[in-house]
Image (cartoon, rainbow, N blue to C red; front, side):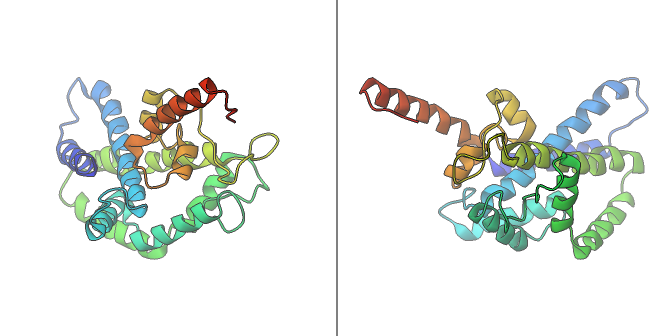
Amino acid sequence: MASALLAAWGGSLVVLLQAPLDTTWTPLWGPLAVGWMSWLFTGLFITGHDAMHGAVAPRRPWLNHAVGAIVVAAYAMFDYRRLRRAHRQHHARPARPGDPDWHDGRRSAPVWWFGAFMLRYLRPGQFARLLVLFWAVQELVPNTNFLLFWALPAVTSTFQLFYFGTYLPHREPEGGHDHPHRAHSTPLAPWLSLLTCFHFGGYHREHHEHPSVPWWRLPSLRSEGTVIQSAWRFLGVKVR
C-alpha cells in the first residue's frame, strides 16, 4: 500500500509538471488534478505516520523506518526521527499538556490551533531544504505547473491533515472527554473518511486504541467491534 501511494504520487507529479496548460480542457481537469495531488500528499504523510507505528513493514523495522523517512521527506522535507519522537509524545499524553499536537484551549478557533501546530513542527533547516528543492525543480519545469501541482497541493494537504486528522478528533466535546485516549471518531461515511484524511478522521479513536493498525484497516476495526458487541448483547452482557 505504501509503495502504491508513493508510485501514484511520483507518477502523477511527473506527468502534471509537464502537462500543457494552454488547452481548452485545463479549467476542467486542472482543479481535479490539484485535488488529486492534495489527496496523494495527504496519503504520503499518513504513510509516514503508519511507519512511526511500525505498520508499514512490521517484520522488517529497517525497511519500515526507511519508507517512513522517504515519504515524509517527499512530503515536505521533514525529519522523520524528530516527527516520530513528537508523535510518541502525542500518543503518551493525547490532548493534554505535553502533547505537541494539542492546542492549549485559550482560543478555540481552528486557525489559532493550526498556527500553534505549524510553529511547533516547522524548522529553519526544513525551510532551507525546501527552498533548495523548489529552486532545483523550477529550473526544470514551468513555474505555473510547479505552483499548481506541487506547491499548492502540499499546502492544502497540511490543512486537510490538521483539520480532519487533528482538530476534529481531538477538540474537546461538550462535557469533556470521556475516555483516556481523549480522541473521537468523526461521523463520516467510509468513502468520505477515506477522501478527507485516509480514515484518520472517521476512525481516529480506533487508531488511538490500536495504533499499530495501518490506515486501510481502520474501518474493519469498527466492523469487528460491532460484531463482537452484538454477540455480547445476544448473550445478555452489557456493553458500553
